[in-house]
Image 1 (cartoon, rainbow, N blue to C red):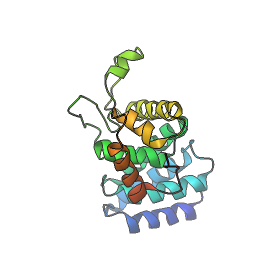
Image 2 (image 1 turned 90 degrees about the vertical axis):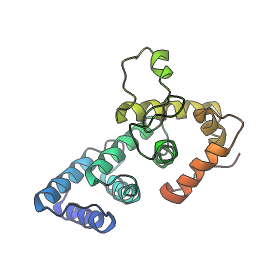
Image 3 (image 1 turned 180 degrees about the horizontal axis):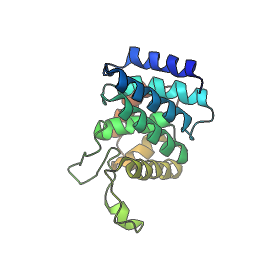
Image 4 (image 1 turned 30 degrees about the horizontal axis):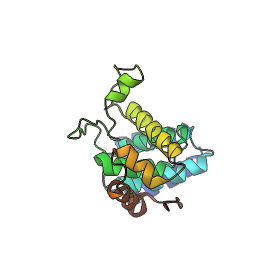
Length: 195
């Protein structure tokens, strides 16, 4: 990536993110990390799309995750898992916000784990009992794949698929929460929320 583009991205990040490092060495390391994140963003069709999305979403994610490097790493992982599952990454971000507020160690009262609050029984169902659901890559893969399954089963109906994901079929309380998070914090393009 040209140095001018990296400098421009760095300037954009530093004007929108509240937790920017003041130490010059740390800033240089973050700049390098950003460049690597964009260059390694295989789930994007082109690098310009990666730059725009990562910078935009990093600013939005700053309310939940202070560290800019951690934000970029999370966004890269979320985008890759969403792309693999053919889901809009903004929808996955909304689910994560509602499920755990980006706390990888979140555990629900019924035992769901990680950012996407995946139930541990899924590990045994697929014969991978050693998987760690608090590992973000594992959690995003499980959660995105489960959501993809329910979206297909419900023929693209977001409200019904999200209710199944949450274990609340027949209710729109959960899907309405995800809709509000998506429309308030993550929306970049329209999604069909109609029943």
